[in-house]
Length: 109
Image (cartoon, rainbow, N blue to C red):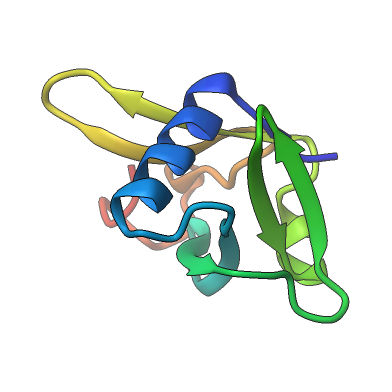
């Protein structure tokens, strides 16, 4: 199961209202992979596509294709804004470690 924080739900509603897309959702997808694990992308979507998993939180909608939903299982989507960094982040689960001699050097982290 993928969870969504209150902060991520609030920010997604704010973004969609700013874009004039009230009632739409955010669609998460796998955008590639490296030795550090998958990279994820986000897009605005009016509706889920066939086979998508949908999570609703505090009036916000999040869509995931099956593959991405499985990769994010056990993780949380959150939104951070600490003054220096701002954005959606995925936390939890078992992320690959680049310090294990996997050969990717300092490209992760």
